[in-house]
Length: 147
Image (cartoon, one colour):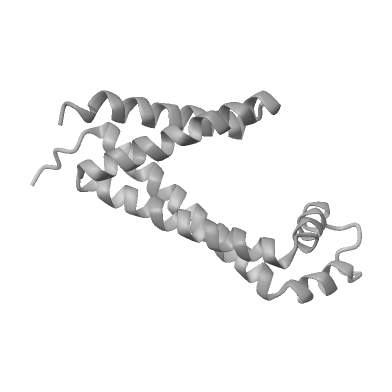
């Protein structure tokens, strides 16, 4: 059987699946950091890291300075967003109207904050995320009424 899904839709599903995996990994890291917070503090103070891994030291410093409540909230919120993103991808794969509406709504809501972030300071990552989300939004709006 030949797959009759439009290539643009397949690309969006792959993108949403990738984002869901990335969010899941982020949630796991945040919740593990919460669980092992004391160990991270001790590790960050050890002589093992001294002057060897600036990036690791910087990251550990950021994590241990986050309040445990904030880590917990961030981990749970990221997990919820990962589940919603996975549901979007699955719904789009099966070409469900509710999934298109959900993606249009969530991506549409994210555009103004992304513009604000770009105004504060442009980075390649921020710009790429903005452009991909803009492309997803315009594709789904354009093709929403066709199907």
